[in-house]
Image (cartoon, rainbow over all chains, first blue to last red; front, side, top):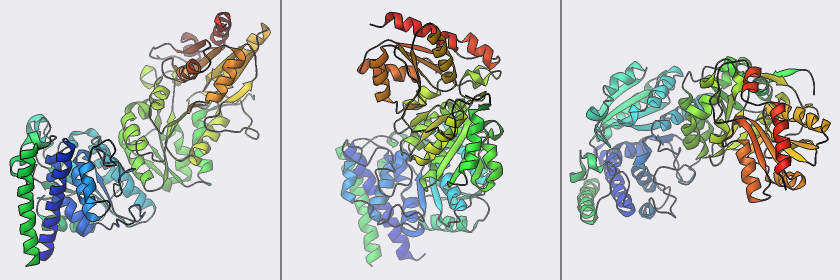
Length: 284
Length: 314
């Protein structure tokens, strides 16, 4: 990947972050922390890897993404809007009573959302179902799911992990957003899900551990997953919760709360500065 | 009615295997395919059958994912573990996005017998009835069970089908039987009281009507195979016509058929609705016949309640 493409993917990640803040601020609720931590993953998936067409969101042959940690919908809506599934302006209606942008992703209402999620642990099973459907129909589309490191405390995740491995779902790639924090505190204190890599290995996955904010590493890991035959891949993404907004970084309190006006202004200022920097780099 | 006895679960498995030739669907089971009878399908169409192991929640959400790719999916387990353990997966991953998943739940009710309370689901119809988009069907015999499976295939969206373990009499003739989701079947007309039953209680309802007949009481019998959507028109018609209703179901008296009928009647033609079901208790081990006797799910009980309802009707 050349520098220009890296900068473009980074720029997209920051535009997603900008949308996250816009969504959560206007809704006065939502989950910024874990949305900000997956921005690069979504940027690489939607702007480099996934075969999708916003003009035909239900294309049966498309690649699919299941945001199993559905509370991070602001990031998903953020990337879908940038990709052209719906107007970026609509982000401001997030969580409002007459909006289609529900608090948690609703596949019936939002173009580009491949599965309704929100109840943790279920999305990864649904992603397995999609991957199995591809195998049944001899189609070559790929399925991606994104799980939280808190989410994997749900037993169903491991039922699904067993299943993916048993049915050799090498067309399903699981991302784990390993930011180390869940609502009640650090996962190490609340309920440690570590070692995450060894658990997935034991369940028969091809496991890759990367920096969640390194678009080259994300892209390389996806390539590795594509080349791994006969078993699913888990990409453990070491991330910073709240990434990109200084006062939100690594602060558990920003798991599920919205910034006030002054805080919003600071976030916008920081993110816009980064966006301008990246745009300048790209235009050089 | 013939002398042949077939369990509705058996009819379910055979229906899947037979209809599998005509329709393209996949079947999932959670390590109970011998008991749920999906094995009959699995043996015939191994490439369309997937065992998920003992993980019902995962099975249902996986079914949702398969269905999201345009497929019809049957997911089977015992009613206890389908409607019970996997309730939330059914609600959030299947019904909320209105995906084309059919829950084939066998071993409903106390007719499970010797396995006892943990395996005798008496709450499933109530639980499933509260979820938007869900259709809830409880067939009364093998012919109706098969027809219900085909109707479920032809209906887009989630359907909960409850089948039983016990072999029971075949009431209908397959050649003439017609099934329509949401349309109750009048098995016997009558003027004095209406017995509305479903599942294994339909046979007892017919027996009770014969007993009542001997006492000069004309009882209508309705097979209400679909609990949701309930056949409101038919209930109203018979509430007006007979002025008294008795319901009979192999389910907790709370939330199932009796409640559904009472909801309709109380808002339209308020007549007495006396309910027969398991009176807010857990089941226990025993033969199905002994359990039906102990829990009062018998033709005699229906007969008694019918007489009582006539006494209090205006």
